[in-house]
Length: 396
Image: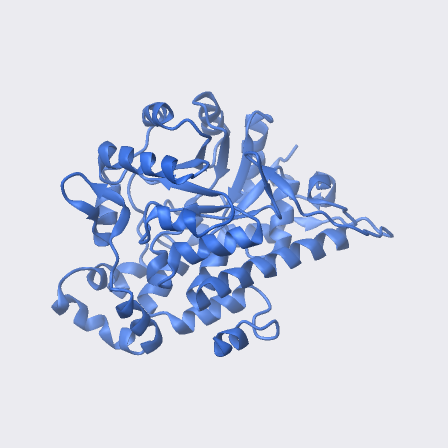
């Protein structure tokens, strides 16, 4: 633990990119690239981050901010600051604590953790580990019967909202994964793993923790009738049979009485359809650039969705958030809060719960400093007047 504390000290880890570098050193290339990579040419992956550079701040001068409030409310939950932990699949491969320690860090920080269907820890353990609100993100892996079982478990465990991801009719082509042998490393064949073993053996710390944790985990929250938990390696194939349609949303609405969040929208008409189908919130998201490449960066798509829902539901956004200033820009353009995935997952991969907590601390401090430099007293007071947006974005 002392070495971990030194590695995460404020002088060694100043920003999220520093956590990324620590994670890259600790993880085998196959696991790191799964976390770090995007689809095809990774154009959208890069644009998600770059789009924030196109938006310029317009601070107010000679303003002293004595007390700066970072609080916001999302679906009735008061958050300590407007950043939530997005669902990240395969988290247990990054660190044995996986979803459990990430949820615990989120709860301690006063924010929401969203559990992915593609998770290695049981949802009951994840919810029990957090002092804060936890949402469940649903894929229809294993069919409707498996999904019905998961929804019942989530309800009984106390998950307070359901997130439906609608941008995965098939898995995107993440070209780093086949090059690194991700499928082979997760599969049962020892012979198929041999070409990729030198890099695995070059990361003995990760390998030891992986083996002590029992190796490749099963999907504990996708229980196939008569078979038990789904094998992790089956996910890509299973997604092609797990498309979520608007008709599925109506069926899910009958099973889930709590708020439903529709994630993966980039168009105003889709956002209005989600409202019509009973969504309590929508997430402007391109899956972190991991599905269809060459789509709009989420920050640029955000204003269209905000205008389309016209205050009827809360709008969240993910994609490219690496700094507190990014959060501020998203809030100014109409988001209630942001979801962050890689930003905290780098911390998880670097040092488990301590790494996630450090990522949250970095972003929270960034956010408060940005507000004070803008001359803005609170997150609630942020609006378009603090930004200069490129004319081509057509932001009203």
